[in-house]
Image (tube, rainbow, N blue to C red; front, side, top):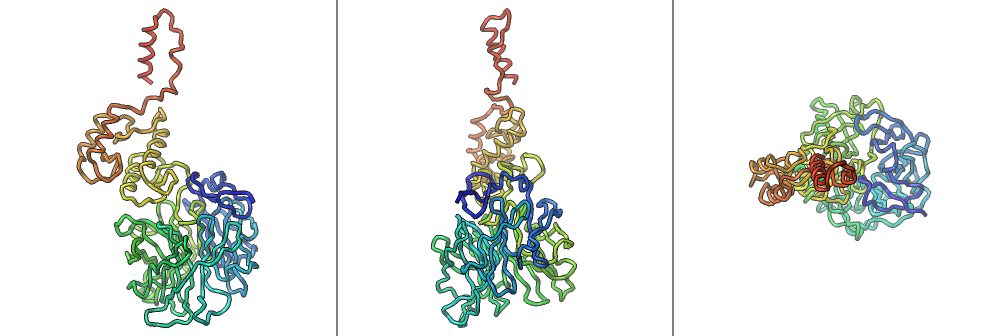
Length: 523
């Protein structure tokens, strides 16, 4: 079988993956160069494609392809993988394949006829050529302490079965309660910043319970219960979608965002935010006011970060006035915009962007070395300031990982200086270290900027923090000094015309050299 690539948003450091079918690199496809958002609709068992920027409808597909409950979705190479739960059917679910551009059905990666196919699959991720599928329940009742009603199934790149993650002695029963079923009903799954596997689970016998269980992919075993509704003092009810996103508590660590249902009409459906360090509650984002208070109910079962670090939330159900829409939330203040109105879908569930990482579910713009972090069409001080702040924070947000190595550091700073200089400066040279105002030269103006902020905590290039350590100090002055009175505006030597070869009639060699030197300085 030929070796192909599953997408890496930056187009380098790609990870080989041998999924069935022709899987050419996503970067080579014109359709996904402008990103798309795909959402599964449980009301008619279709997949709907929208423009990722403005939410405009593009096309619908997967009709009559055997879908009965579209759930987890991932763009892998030039294909879209879709979990088919086969809702209400007495046979296994499956993982189906579609052409990401045309929507053509390409068969199954994991067919339902496979004896090891998941019975009730929901979310899925791919990491290091392994497909992880959250299997809500086994085929048949779980009635003894030797079985667990639910599992995480794993498959090789060709769809062949690898085995289940090891639950060991995991028991999600409340403290002091003996539950012969040892309920573990997984729904959502994601790879965290620590490279651990995070799985949301609930108990169908007690819908007010919720758990986030963490697994080690190396040992394939449970490491701990990261969040437990019985001990967290929080209202985590029937969690499903989960994804890591922006730091919400100021500790410079990405936090975990999880969907949660209400307890009763006096309660809210919400997005819960948990500390990425210890799983403690940070805060909630309410999806609506409680119905008992006159609110129009809105609940969600999936979520995903998209462009501009906004949290995209399909409203799976609730009041008819809002059910079916897709919202884009600003997680800093909980405000939202309806990016897709409910005229297109009746029951939106799982979703994916073309630029969604298939392991971490992070959104990473697929534009090579870009650097326009605020999407205003230019690469300027606001962008380099945002990058310097990200480097100083140590959070390694993939939105700033220009090199595609999984880290946000000085390599990305240098990549930005080179890319922005190539676009902004007539010479095409990289901006120089010490050029605080990005005018192309390192001079007294830049020194004045450094001097006015010296010995302060200020993670901003425009304040003189050239080494992105969060401080404006002597090390930054040294960088300015090493390039003082240098210019990136002049063309590189390789671009100079061959002036020496010109015939200058009547001039001796020394005069020609003088003219050459003067012309060189003018370029």
